[in-house]
Image (cartoon, rainbow, N blue to C red; front, side):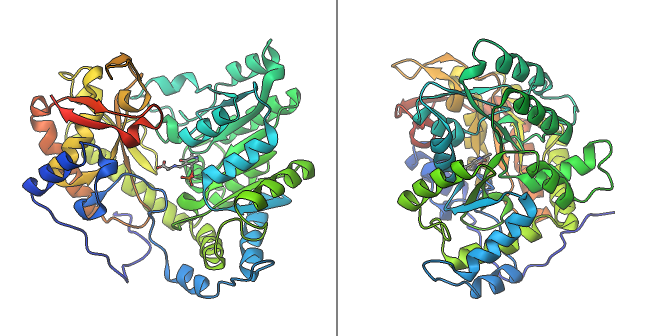
Length: 456
Ligand code: F0G
């Protein structure tokens, strides 16, 4: 039986339909970097699931009640009420987006020279740790290395490595442990409740704060109910509540599971950490009852945070991701298994074996998806993660050459995804015709945003 989306479309936005010649011109002008394309040159935009979701009628109704008072706005108390019940944290602050929440909480917790540990730091999370002159170290579980296995929780942290680091010679340099749920940098794979519980217990024994990066807390909760023994009859809300209650603090970009264009929060138990955060928040984001967000945005988020945990919504979203993964596989394109929810990760290295890592097979597949079908997505491979020499030639490749198809919430229908699969199938029929790419210009940091490339 088809799993339907539990909503219908009420307001529509036309999507640009372009010709192959248009797209060739656009991509060449953009220096073969999708970040330089204009949105009106893109037919299906799978670049990010962040801030790209469709809002509901109830969210817009809530936003119309937005209270724009400078301090103590009703909107803040509605936002705070939802998050307080969900997370149980006594101190909760809004921020304009996830990386601002990271900067504030990490600034309050870290001293230069410390280490942070994670299943996988997201790239802004890593950057915020490094900006404080600390080292961000990833400890993904061993199952994560096998892209094809059906292991259900490949987003887990390696508990043995965590324990060894915390009890070893570097243990006293660890500033905090942060668990990213779901693990975006780790192919969008979920983290089990057993893993969160065990990691929290290890941190407690070592006296190290245990944090969540909870950007996709609802999607992680859904995958727990589907994959973890003992959770089949537990609601996603209850799973999420239990996860938050295992942590000492959290940061979350609400541009994902808040289903709104902008927003985030940070929260913690420790009142001293909270007052340090409040000072930085007030100086850099905004007063504690708005944190860089407008009242109407806080109300939209409060409602989005309720809707995102509805089982019918999560079931249909997971089904859409699984459907696209199946179609991609049938078309001959391998997807990191088992498919998660917020994105599919295509194995470009395997599809394009004639392109060596130094000619960026992931980037080549992403460019080809645009040229063939106007589909925008980004590489997660050697362009993003490899190291280069002064002539922009690859020195150390990334472990895998992947492409992420991020799936915006409530935006595309089954026929859009079928079109994506058909485009993939057309590429997979003659993969040897896809050219590699050479880097012609870049910047020392944030290379993927700024590089200009050319086909070779
Ligand atoms: N943490 C995770 C796990 C994320 O995926 C992101 C953003 C952030 C933190 C930062 O949040 O964008 O609100 O500042 N991820 C987006 C993406 C950009 O496309 O995956 P932000």
